[in-house]
Length: 266
Ligand SMILES: Nc1ncnc2c1ncn2[C@@H]1O[C@H](COP(=O)(O)OP(=O)(O)OP(=O)(O)O)[C@@H](O)[C@H]1O
Ligand SMILES: [Mg+2]
Image (cartoon, rainbow, N blue to C red):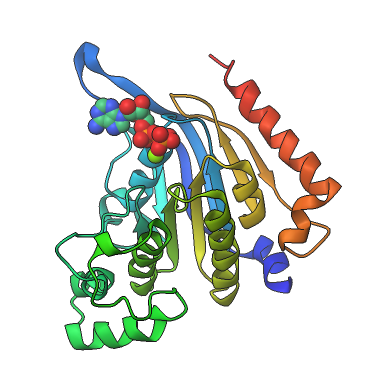
């Protein structure tokens, strides 16, 4: 795709240099991230994969401005750590739908927080409900939704805020394999229609990372360090057919071997 080829020339919209994060104090501290270097260019989808507890969510919290690094620098769209909060769309690991609000009122929460009137927010949400598979469920409460619908609702809330940077923390982890595969294709299509959005996707799933992203960062166990960063260029267009190609299988086993070897890094 031309736009993706051009993305090599685009500016680094996220740049993280030598970031470390230690949580806790005195002897009760935990080193969560160590000397992380990372970037994403405008329009790129970049995945971060790594074992459970290696610091992936903490890393996204830092990109979102919810957490501060202890050292190193973070720049997102020209903003630094202290000014980041609210500047990016962040779908956190838990869907965080409010049980006492209807689907519509959950979905418009981000817009309301941006100071947009309820009426305009509802209009914007209504336009997208169908493509997010939520039409007809606007007045239901979250408990009435399937896991996939809850995740799409949380995702719609994130995307409606119309930020150029989206941080997605294991957006499909609650889903079974079939729904997960549908959602991945759905996300791929969605991102193709949002060419300029930069996405940082955290996942445990190597296939998901390969299927969706332009580059992959592999993190070591805690303290999370980047052990390898790899650009993904496919011979075929992205589709389910890609998954059965030799190139896909080889790339997957290479990334898996990085993940496994990172386990032995002290
Ligand atoms: N507030 C906190 N106090 C103490 N430890 C914390 C705190 N926040 C995170 N940690 C620890 O930091 C480590 C990294 O947590 P984080 O949630 O970033 O990992 P993760 O890679 O997202 O894990 P998972 O894949 O399970 O979601 C974990 O070991 C966690 O226990
Ligand atoms: Mg996490």
